[in-house]
Length: 549
Ligand code: NOJ
Ligand code: CA
Image (cartoon, rainbow, N blue to C red):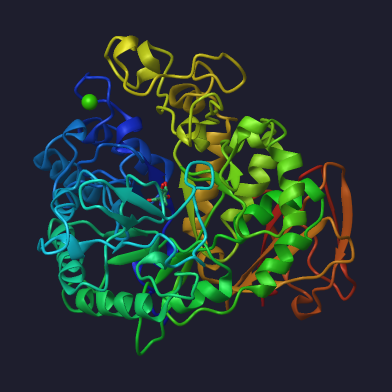
């Protein structure tokens, strides 16, 4: 008997912002009431866990990643009761829900910080990291390079500098101060008690600061994460902690912890993401193959979260300078497409609206090891707006139909808090909306839904052991997912012209070959390398079955 892994191991995640998903009360802002109405849509698509972007009270200087109250729902999004109805209805449809939680910093409007500004001696002063000397921790890099010049900011009231790894409106909490740790642990428990299934834990590498270090991945940070996991283990053993550590695979590995001293059971695989795009730009599999080879095996029960795009810029922190230059050239030819060390565009415009490339990247995302995380709107071909500031251009309202505000809100268009894109084009919501996608049986939406169904049907696609193949043709990426009863062979052509390959699969001589989705079987494997031809950006999912007796 197969031992069932934790629920999140095989989940398909769907990242969304309640604020831009659906407006249920007609005030021009998306909310939990609207999201609740759209739950059947998400269940129909076939995702299994929703990841909610920050939903707490916030002055929204960083779209909610600047929290001013950890125990409440932002009034724009509805009441706590409405959140609970949403949670109940999601669970009734078999959907899990995790929420973003920001441990590292608060808003400068948080009452803790306002109290801390009273200066040394005030009980809240030590909740934040202060210094009289802005030269401390000089080795810590600046993350928001577009907006910040220093990780220290002067506070006129406290007459000291405070530490912030992100915007200066987001002072870092001081994890060396025990009450901070206790409060954040209690916050997690609070939401789990309300029924949440876990958290996407924001910015985990930066919790502690130490002189003469990069102030990232410190042993103290790992010790706190172990404490956090241990605290939840007893009452909430199923709770997911999905860590955001934008680091090399070997540096992310410690965030999983060990079986004896576990930390976060799931972490994003950041370095894989840009290499999926790089491989397409360079028309060869190498970038993907290399990063997968560099990815260490995980401790039992742990899992990667993989993704193509998210609510931030497509980060290029985990590529070298040559690779970054290639990425800028291919995907961000205009300066305003860039942001910090990354590219602020959505998936479809990045891939020039080329359905073949969109399908290819999704086919890889859904068959490579890891639990895939989809970004809302990609399923309907949503566009972006590079004229909006910061990362707002990739956070447009979801389009549901061709009616008023494209079904997002019944408010007069002038009242929308986040305006619909004005610029008509191939990704205009008039074309790229849910109703249009569902009505067209050959849309990408139906393609994706079918692939999600196949992934749900074939345990091998979710759990199979990963074996990378090395065909002679450098444009071809090929790998197996294998289990005792079947294997799935994935073959992808990273280039814009047809490519032929022959795969060495002697271990599977005599096995039957059935394409997924099902069509006429291919000839079984013989003794010779197996010949395949793939069209431009083509791919195959082939189910391999042992010879029938
Ligand atoms: C990571 C989040 O994804 C990003 O949107 C945010 O700005 C930073 N953390 C700071 O909280
Ligand atoms: Ca609303």
